[in-house]
Image (cartoon, rainbow, N blue to C red; front, side, top):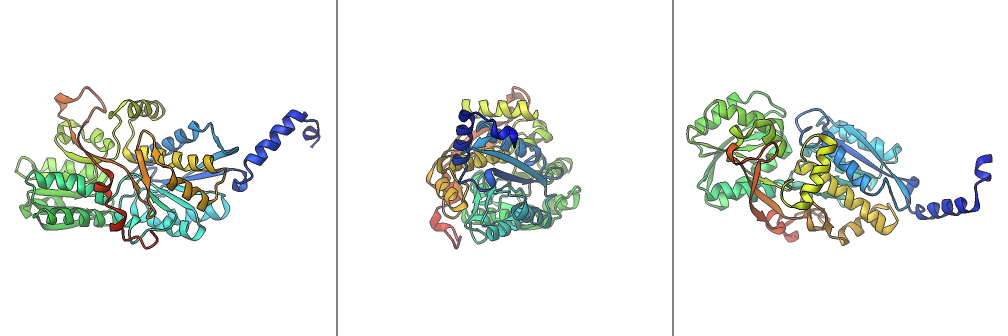
Length: 401
């Protein structure tokens, strides 16, 4: 106390200014909670890299916003909805966390949505993919940033059908995400005149895909659609390669494939695979510059989920900076008012159903001879305009839009 009393008038004035600047910031700080998979199936897709991406957004603000310090807390939800919900509830009730971010795995995102709705907290979804998050399962404070199953269907599904892949068999992860992805791709296939010959659900996560691949092989379908992600996709593609699926005349459609998956598989196995991406590090000078910083920080190039986490956290902080407040309704209104403009999205629009609409990209995995080295894996085939990828607001079935 004695030290406080001997502060100079100039320093005291600065302290008063800082206090006034953060007057609209609850608890005197902005606290962001990253809930992600740190150690299991989706840890390469999201995980530590998503935490690093959020840190990059915070560092861009110098560690403070609207005169208040920014704090980041993280937890491993282990892809379990109950762990995620309990952690989010504790963070919101006693941990002074203002927003929940990342949330890979649809069951996790839906569980945290319930907590966010009860506590009136913003939930920034990057990793979870199911289109119901901005349809029947939407909440007023839930924002779906990076991609969804509809966009994946419009991109990869449409491209495969256009090349003659008019009969499908699905290997589907047995939870909400897999079901949503199969449903959205089925709609695209049938609309184009194709047909689905069957499907089989596999546990999440799964390590042995032999029996599932054999069922798909026996179906005679031209295309085996992988309605899964992360380690499940990698293991399924490896199993298909071992059973000579492509050599036997069938093709594999990885419906949610990430750069980290291609890195794990290698170009010899993955070459020619078509995939829909929200972000690729080598698209332009801006993506290359940001990805270089990410690489220096993590030793890896970013996935779309990780880039999307950066974008969502950055836009959230920009809204706080613009309003001088971390009040949920105030920040949401400003986030919707401002276009999303960064290396991830140009002119992105945040709709009232929670969907962040931005361009998506159809990509093809390069052959080894086309690649200049590690991480040079994709060539962009087509830009998919945002409304084509995600649909219009009128198509959304979100009851609070």
